Length: 407
Ligand SMILES: Cc1cc2nc3c(=O)[nH]c(=O)nc-3n(C[C@H](O)[C@H](O)[C@H](O)COP(=O)(O)OP(=O)(O)OC[C@H]3O[C@@H](n4cnc5c(N)ncnc54)[C@H](O)[C@@H]3O)c2cc1C
Image 1 (cartoon, rainbow, N blue to C red):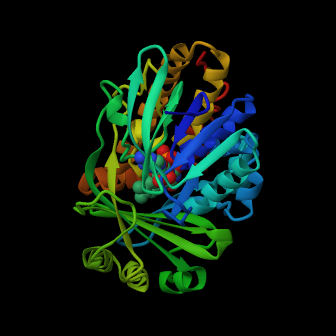
Image 2 (cartoon, rainbow, N blue to C red; image 1 turned 180 degrees about the horizontal axis):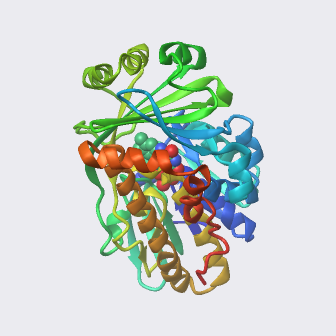
Image 3 (spheres, rainbow, N blue to C red; image 1 turned 135 degrees about the vertical axis):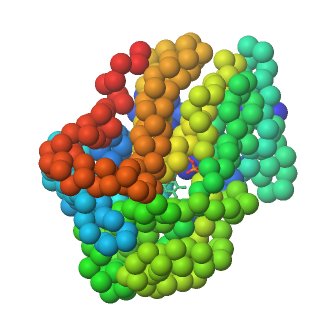
């Protein structure tokens, strides 16, 4: 049996790395076990709203991220059929002024790299790559034993607190009594990136180099925004479908996607065709935030492992970052009484994550609406002032997880 630091994290994704950095700010050392032996460019674009970027700034990650991220000037909502704009929510300087931190769009790999490089400079953080954590068991009163596989060999390790940041398909979730399993939502996210000039040429004015553009249609929605310092455009189209796999990087037959876009509007069809063979299918799985997140003997779920919210509010990474900082603050505040900290973490985070999930469900309903509902949506969006459109996001983007009541 090998000892590990008192706090061990499983998964060096967004949640795991942010937790380690937030714990280090409190002088607490952690070891992270990550199953991947190398950090590949997994994923595609992410939107990072001010509720997340203000926390990244405090952790010393924002400067590095801003070197590759893009600060879009607005989110534009358009009808996919006609490409006509319905509403424009100002971002850029207006967002920073209103919500106190920038709204950014970035490649997931750039966020992970910024977090990883910051973590590698931190002496209190040790990262063990190529280590798959298989299972865990509780030793009454003395923490958690877990088994990992590294270089083809199995090792048993003991720790006081195991933080499971192992994503939506968590291997550890079932050890938490009354945790909820992940389930397929019936939606596929098709993702592709195109060089900026190719995307702008195919988009023929429908997409823009400095904006997030969302196209709404009863059968799908498509979002396009710049990433990688503005060198590429990230495309994500969300459609009902079935891809019976649990991975985020499946190449799959994109004919249905390309036809759906082309039949709606030829410009969108050209855009989809330009990315032919680049599209990857991400089956969207969710973990409702209603289950238990913590085991009092010393295990806690965080990020997608606890509550994968479908991407309709673009807040999965944001919620993982908020979780990480709140958990670290509460563990520091209740030093010596981790079970109190874990209960407080669950109580603090659940209402927020549930509200975000409800907002995502509302977005899915209205963005994919047809008939009279779509008509009402269009009328309301067109009538709303920019101020009213921004005010609608104050609770979400203006939120500061570190000053919200939680202790
Ligand atoms: C289509 C789509 C679009 C999205 N868009 C946005 C967006 O615009 N904005 C936003 O904020 N979020 C977005 N998200 C969500 C966001 O990507 C996730 O919520 C976020 O990555 C969750 O971070 P995590 O650290 O919890 O999990 P992950 O990023 O999945 O990290 C889990 C880590 O754990 C490791 N791991 C897993 N199992 C083990 C094991 N047994 N042992 C050791 N290591 C293990 C994995 O290798 C991985 O490194 C989107 C998601 C989808 C699917």
